[in-house]
Amino acid sequence: MGNFWTLAGFEYKKLLQKKVVWVTFIIMAVICILAVCLPYWMNSYSIDGKTVSGYEMTKRSIKQSKEQSGTKIDDSYLKKAKEEPDSIPNSIYSFLFLIMDSSGKEIGDFNMADLYNTRKELIEQRWGEAHLTKGETEYLASLERQVEIPVVYEYSEGYDLMNSMMSFVCMMQILLAAVSIPSILADEHKGRTDQIILCTHFGKKVLYMVKGFVGVTFSVVSTLLLSLAVAIPIFAVYGFDGFTASIQQSAPM
Image 1 (tube, rainbow, N blue to C red):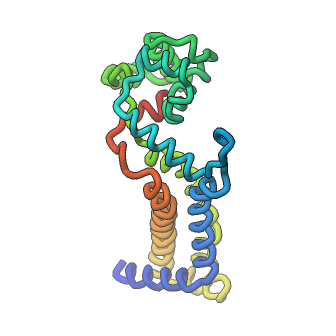
Image 2 (image 1 turned 60 degrees about the horizontal axis):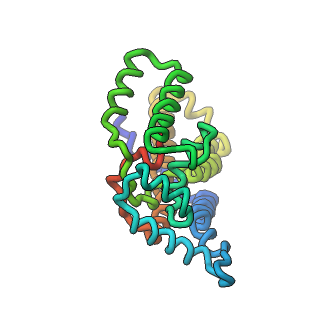
Image 3 (image 1 turned 180 degrees about the horizontal axis):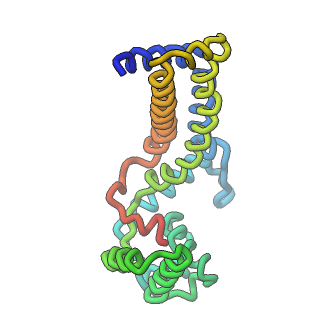
């Protein structure tokens, strides 16, 4: 193991000297940035005969959401959502829609008790579908009892969007890893030195541990960098508000 870090440095040097690794990483990073920014640039809306850009609509939505931060989703708010739907932020509609869509009801069919009872029934139904043990169900039920009812809406759209974008980042990382990591193992075969390595008494085990270590750490670091490529434009637009927001408002079930 004395040569582990020396070999790791050598493997990283070989990996990072490959142009295809850098080109692929840059392409993946640009795609991540564009996935966040393109909706602001390409979308436009017509309001009262005036064309409004996607970015301007986003800023209006953010302002509306921040103004209603701290609002309780109770009977009076549900009545307002039915009578004045345009005054309700998209993030609150998403909360209501996830429950309504799963139950097959409309917003006018709910009062506060119905809303949260339906949510509770749907959660318990999912516990049953997951075949949880009695102990697991009791533990989750104890956590549910700690949830404040009615839910208090808090602006957290930056974190919500970041969370929804992580699956996209994972896809980009898989493509990057598929292009980059195989070369860690292919160089010896290409240089016809693989049989020599396989015959060495100490080199084989350590070298393949190093290759595994480099593959894992490269994947972790590149995932963090791609996540940063997404996070910078998201938080530049939406801000960092809402870090302490209840997770139930984003994932009610």
